[in-house]
Length: 299
Image 1 (tube, rainbow, N blue to C red):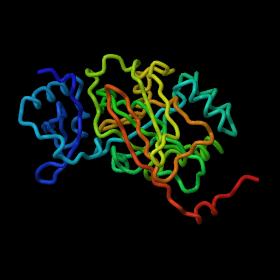
Image 2: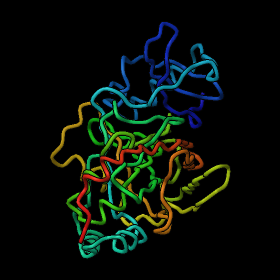
Image 3: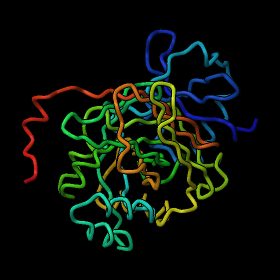
Image 4: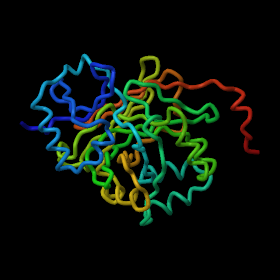
């Protein structure tokens, strides 16, 4: 049986336990692993054998199950930056120190940064957040690599690398605060195995922000504009890091709205990559005046 149209998911089983499964044609098929991390310790060859065997068994109607965030355990989400020319240009425009972005764009060493542990990832349909101490906040739609514990690309997903343009623009050393906070990382509820994507450099990425029923920003791009090789990025992540439960690596974005567009409470952000999936989230904007007032304003 062909498994070219399968995706990997996690869902709540009949006894309330988390189950890792293969989703195909409206059915989910439990996989013989105790956790998603177990799956990411496999090779592509072993993964395909396990999936092919599973879809021959009894399926469960996908509409009847509750899906969970797709990663678990010790799996980490990392991200790459300045991997598209337009991203370099946008970072330079917003930054008080634009030279750092020009230097990293063509540097042999890629920019990589930690984004979230599995337990902090927001699922499709969940709520992403923007920081109360940042007036300018944006979604960043990105193709994400699903990497095995050995660093092999097992598949592809979608990441929303929600970011504070204000904080990163003030000083590149503030990048962790601009990128890593509650609700700043969402992943699609599934990922597709590498064999199901003929060419990862020919994928269309689309995004929209809808506010009160009206589109306030939408755009599309293609992974063909990537400035770095996907294998290069995955190798760079594993140079001095062990990932016993594998990793997800977001590969950067080249879609950035104008500087007068920011995420607001109630906005709905939808990212789509045909052939990979869709990721939709609602924005929550905390109203913490005391937080804003505690941040020193530039002279």
